[in-house]
Structure formats: structure tokens, C-alpha cells
Amino acid sequence: MLMIMTIYGTVKMFTRMIVYCGIGGIVLIIRHHNRKKRRQEMEDGTKKIMRETPKDENGKYPWEK
Image 1 (cartoon, one colour):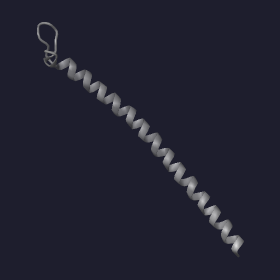
Image 2: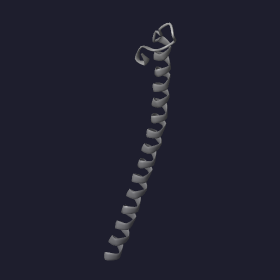
Image 3: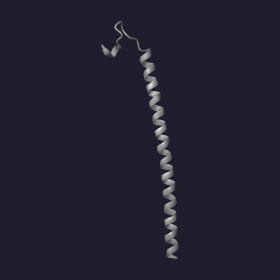
Image 4: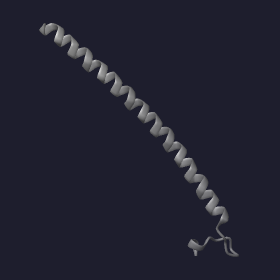
């Protein structure tokens, strides 16, 4: 009986570890993808702001004076 319970506990722990590692891997992949996408959105927004910001006669932005 003790041997069966030990094997059952080991199988249960192994199954949990597989599930936890699988979910953890999926989470890391999704976070990496979203980080890359968000960074690209920020860069595009910065380019848009720089395009729309008025420059003076010397071609300088207001914060460069």
C-alpha cells in the first residue's frame, strides 16, 4: 500500500510540474511577444510626435533651445 501511494505521489507531482512548466513557458512567450509589440508602438508614437512638433527657423525643437 505504501509503495502504491509513493508512486501515486510521484506521478502526481510530475504531472503538476509538467503543467506548471507548460503554463510558465506560455506566459513567458506571450510576455515577450507583447513587449516587442508595445516597444514598436512606442517608437511609432515617438516618430509621429517628432513629425508633428513645430521647429524654429534653425530646425531646432523647442526643448533644444
